[in-house]
Length: 430
Image (cartoon, rainbow, N blue to C red):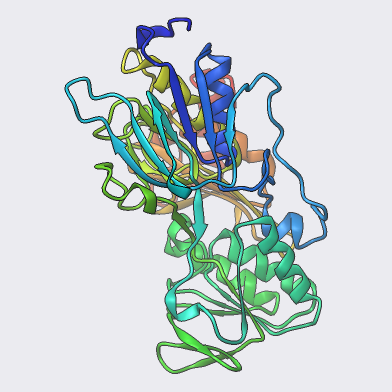
């Protein structure tokens, strides 16, 4: 095979575990970057390419993706496909050479490799008190999950949504649009609090209440009862359908005992290389990597970030430690709730500062800082402002642009931002 950068011709066989978006795109990136050795994709899906996973609360519940859509795949992928196959264990080479290893697969099979991409994705979290029994309980992770929920909603049920993240809030909004009775149950003080912080979470709770959704905050779920959900304080929330939207659980069970840090996903360094291993990378929902832009370990959020991380992981694997490039990403979330467009970019740490519009009108921009730099921005019904603030977060723009003296005017902030942009100190790409 052709020598690929630092591999010295020793990277002959790369295994990609997971035919998720991250897995498929990493395989394509390996070929695009010049790897011409053996490439094996291991996927639990019965067919290849698998179904694309659409935004469940918007694309499927509202009638899109009726027949499903499959991932597109580059025609020159040239990979061995082991479909309907699961990885059950990983043994890494711990000799002096310290590269490669063996995968233990279903039905007693094994697969040796020189390089490994972990892309097994994540499953919907489902707390033990919300498993089984009645009423009907749904999670939203796959295309089939979304179809099943859409069918259940056609019967006009009372709905309880457990979890007020972006998925839970969007589901609640859709159910209200259908005229259904909806209660959202959230452990924190308001929706999206883990992303936007307490203040903005409480602000958005009022958006739900204004549209007839019952928002129950600071509440934990104890279990199901025949007529709905029982809370820890004994309160019962009536429901015929329960939607559980409490986040993702990385699929790392098969990696236990491998020596990798998989406490909450595969731990990666800034280049997407697995900590404590050689020639092992990961991408997508299964991974948590050190994002040098924010100086912290985090996950990718949007679809485009997953594609970019998959390419970065492939690049790092082929670099084999030589000139591997750190992967930086600015998190982005978007949601449509009750006709309101909610967009967020960056990290919601610190105190938000409203720099345009007003909270009362629900048409505003709130900017977050760490005291030195702009770290995030929430745009509510201000879609045209998003790219501007994303560029500022990526450029680590100074917090002084929005931290006006006490009593300062929003107009002063706007003037500061305009002057900063005019100084051409920001990158020219969004």
